[in-house]
Length: 589
Ligand code: DON
Image 1: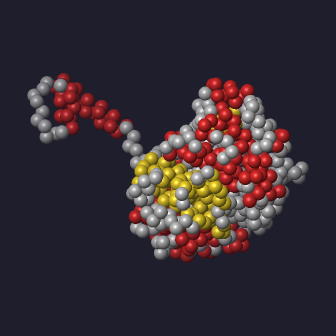
Image 2: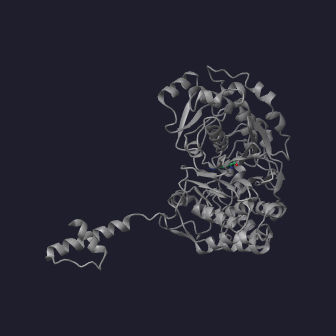
């Protein structure tokens, strides 16, 4: 009977049988109740895919609207570089906490013919920067200066990077087509996801305090999923870039607004800084690991060097026999990570300013020697490798990675960032975009940790026009001369170990891509002397055995957020987004 009534309420054409008024009231109440239930069921904002298999092209990005922009470009004949450019501009709108035009990044490219390349559009220290700029009179670091506000900003590289990438590799003739979707999204607005709404609420007061209001990111009532974010000033800035090319950002009106904003907050970036910025093509760092060739980002990122070091160390041990997350495997991997991060602190920096011994660092002989102190039974304390101790602060940071393979077989791996969530929290007044706080990636003082707990020294000291050291690890892996994997992640210092572990999950522990990405992770970065573990990573027995070797642990909710593509032996493409970011989305065809 109930079933019948239910239908009556929804299909008015069905003849209603005779019934008394009580029955009719009951029927109406039931219909009202049912409608109320329907209305309160949240309609998903976006159709998010965490894993797809595709025949010809695939995009994994941090936002479904950006993934859609990328696939549309490829459907029109654009290649993976075109798609990555359109995605970068789209993310600057729909993923304001990390997608950017006010930040920088790295792009690693492998063309279908095997040619490889790396683009560095990392931010630079301003001309007026100096090595002690974040120190007080007693030479102590004033912590907040490199993290919040106008002095934390490095000269942005993103727009120059996109134009350099397009000039060398673009297949879509006019870059305007690649900027257009971002303009539309900024001008017409889009619905924010729950994650973005939460972040905007979390940082509301800081953004409000630092900036001239009103701005589109600060509302009087809290943001909720589905609210529209419209960014008219950003749309205008993007339109200037669209009309005038890179000069639409680094010169003219945008540069004027940029410098006025910087001066309002006593920052030091000038018009000359903006006018001089250039992206740089670099030779990717490469290394063999068993049957695989690793192609990754060289300095000023530490990512590629560190990843290759870790894998080359693993070559000397039967990792797969030890088993996934076995105490023996974790001990070995953590001890290797400890040594590699000690090298990072000492030797890595911008190779345009400091002689980084890349070849020596990744040489088999050096890495064998580096592990001579490895003891299977106990830890090698970090202070016996190099000195220093500090607190690790993994609070609120955000970057974003995109992996793309196009129908021609070209692959692109690109990581871009403002550093922290919404960078320095400074929005350029009248131009609508957030500025990075990438200056915090420099070593403000030898041995004093940055927001990721990373320490550094001379190699990464501040100098005018130098690029700050990064951990971003956009990577492409080849096997038998073909693309095997494309991967990378946001996650500060944990990016390197995440890329390392997801790759070994596939290559050593035989996992499919999705379990490999979803699997819990651990991370050792030399200092502090502890293993960071995601919650529920270790069984009690494993934890006890590792503790008996001397390991200490710190639990965190989540670490880096991987976006990866795996090319199957039959040529099909599997793309996976990480559940650690609910908005990660895969699209393809
Ligand atoms: O370049 C770096 O290593 C950092 N600025 C990256 C920051 C980051 O990944 C934050 N994201 N979660």
